[in-house]
Structure formats: structure tokens, C-alpha cells
Figure 1 (cartoon, helix red, strand yellow):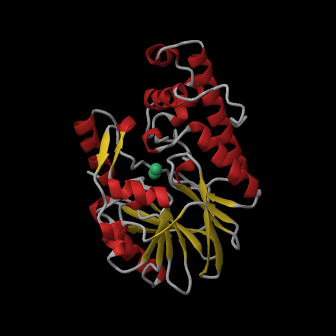
Figure 2: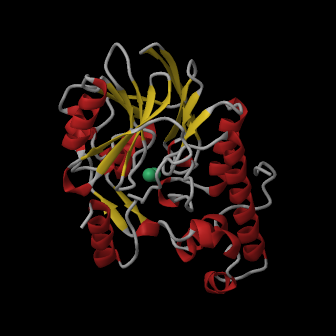
Length: 326
Ligand SMILES: [Zn+2]
Ligand SMILES: [Zn+2]
């Protein structure tokens, strides 16, 4: 049984729904680069995918968050650290691919499929950086209400030692790396990582490519914040920019525009149903996103789970606000 299957099976048994944040991921088939596959223990296979210059993505077949890598003088800088339990294998993969141990770790947000390797990597002495809210949520432990999952407090060694609230710029490994906060999007502690020299952006879980995005409302996330965050990325991305999503294969700017259109469409449909006074049960019976459900609703979140998250999110919003993304 693969790690993902066992994880999902555990989630199914314990919470009664496909409630893990580790997701299946498709092969990065639209990339023309040669990639290296490394078989790790526990059935998880890692693929090291060249993105551009000294930037890579490490994608695991367990579907946990895409790891960004920028190699150079201080050793590979990692963007996110996958789930717990695969870190030894991951470190082997990194050592084999780049001949160096990781030199720094930046977390895009607190979720355990992006910070699960923090403790093991922290023990090697590297510095961990994240948004302040990500550290607060990791330190406190969290309940993800929509997935009915409880995440215990992280040990001190796993916590980001360096945090910021707005933005931070790193001048390392021949790169200018700008990390900036987007407000109340996937969570309230998301950062987007812009590799300015190489024109590559790691977007964290603001973007799920090929599946419905998870919006963690109980961690301060919202669909309107997701759309506004995507808009911030579109402002700095060109047609040549390489875009790394939190889950799924790399995408182009045009594909990110399509993703934004999907977010706006499902938001507007749900807002209209809520404005008509529909109950959650009535909305679920209407299949308002049937056109998207077929492609996006069979990978991680089911159509019902996604619609429920949207309903709960938008029911608490003041929809007369005039600052909503259009
Ligand atoms: Zn994720
Ligand atoms: Zn996440």
C-alpha cells in the first residue's frame, strides 16, 4: 500500500471523509526538461524536475506539497518540507541530486504536508523561515474544521526561527528571492516566493493545478483572498514566468488566468445561491459546478466537500462589500 493510500485510508477510518491534505499529483508531463526519479522507502517516489537555471521542483508521488529548490553556495534552499516520515528519503534524494545538504528552508504556510519535514531538517541546524501566522499556528496546534482533523503542536525544533509579516528579500545562491505575504487566502499565513533573477514563482497552496483547491477557512483562509492573491501573482508574472503550484504540475500564466476564472465562477455561483436563501443541503442538490466537478472534483476534495467549504466561507462574508475581486 502506498503512503498516500495508507494516509487516505487512515483518514477515511478516523474522520469518515477523504480528509488528508496530502494529495495525489499528476506527472509534470507538460515540462520538456528531463527529470530524475528516485524511489524512496514506503513506496513514495520523488521526482526532481528542473524548472529553470538553478531552480528545481521535487514532487512526491504521495501528492504532498511541491518542494521548490534553489541550489547554490549555501546549499539547496528548500521551499516547504513535505509530510513527516519521508524526510530521511528526501534528504537522500537532495544529496544525490545536488551533492549538498539543504542550507535553508522557507515554508509557504503551516499545513503539515508543507512543514512535515521541519523537525528532521531543523535538527540538521538549518534556518527555517515562514510568515509569523504560520509559526503561531504550528506552535499552537490546529483543528482543520472542514476536514475534521486535529494537528498537534509542532516541537520547538520544527518551528520557523525567522518570521516576518509583510515581505522579506534574500540575496543568496545567485538569486534575489522575494517572499511576500498574501492576506487571508489559503490560510492567514501564506507567502508567495518570487525568484526574481530566474523569473520563477512558487505560489504555495494559493494554486492547486488540476484539482479543486482547499481553502482552510478555520485557518483564516477565504475564496476572495485566494482570488486577490492570484491577482498579486498575475501582476508580477509574464508569459515566460515559470509558475509552481502547491499541488499539481507547473503552469503557465494563461493557465493561471483560467484558474482565476474558475475561482471567480464558482464564487459567483455560490454567492448567488446564498443570496437566494438556499440552504447548504439545497445547494448541494443543485450541482452548480457540474462543469468543473468532472475534472477537478475527483482528485482530492469531492464536489460536495468543495461546495460545502465555499458555502461556509461565503455565508459569513458581507457580499455587499465593494472591494471583492471581480
Ligand atoms: Zn498543500
Ligand atoms: Zn495547504
